[in-house]
Length: 413
Ligand code: GLA
Image (cartoon, rainbow, N blue to C red; front, side, top):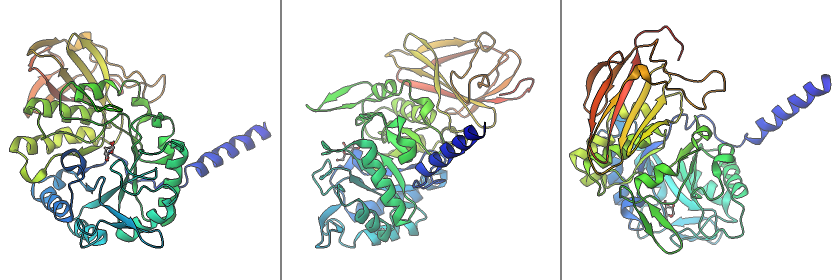
């Protein structure tokens, strides 16, 4: 008995030690921000980054929770004689510290990008062999977020490479959100919680509803393709460790309905909400989509549980996400080419979370005994209660999203 107890304490200590080098408490809800890659790729400079920080404030995005201004690939110059990485002085003449100071002066945080291999995907110097020096440099500059990519890593093991960078950042002592970006190749959901705060689950996103764009050795994927690749991953995410289906394409080229669906899906999946459009020139519709605070509240809900696909009827999908205050978010997605009228009789539906939190104590709606107030979060109106069956028309490539607030409390969650 005693030996068993000692062994148990030993295992506990080991597991505490094992994750001791990760900064805790800095991504308790999915990170929100903007990243340069989807629109600008390598065409970036300090004025652009500062402009984005300005617009993040003036557009109201900061007020609804967006926080990080993330510089993706191609900010790099060469290493100096001591091996410290420098910025590209043509693109960033004031230096990265000045950019960080500016972003911080707006009440925002700065993100940067590197790669575990010898070179980044864009051919710039990678961090392989320089992890501790790079982490030190980022800390000196005032960097708050690191996206760490996986190009040119043929001789590396992902888990070890991300552990090294995690330890390097930790030893530099400035809290940094670590975004693992190895495209899901090494099942990061199985080890990512210990190494970082979010992990990409797929290859790169592209701004189309349901397409694959073949680049030869790799493909980029439309919204529906990425959604389908999230199957089976929801149980791995939670506060401090999120599945990342990639940065968003809202405001790039899709229709308003498609953008709303894309944004709602990311919210339901408790995905990081990292905008990837040009904030300076975005349409009113794109801005309204990105700043829908009711949808954001679903994403940022403290319970941190991803939605599950409850039911599929042809092109229609019904998704449910349990929320911290015992309410639920519900999304009806029309993937198809035609508008569809759907009927949902609450009393005939038994919505039970298939996984969380633990077997035997699952979240369930229990519509028979519990009544919920229904609020339509895109059209901003109340739709009555779950006592009456719902009939709604869902446009093609579109969603409706409801918040279901419990009003009678005969049952637990
Ligand atoms: C990879 C990543 C992208 C982006 C580019 C930069 O493809 O998945 O998100 O960071 O590299 O080169």
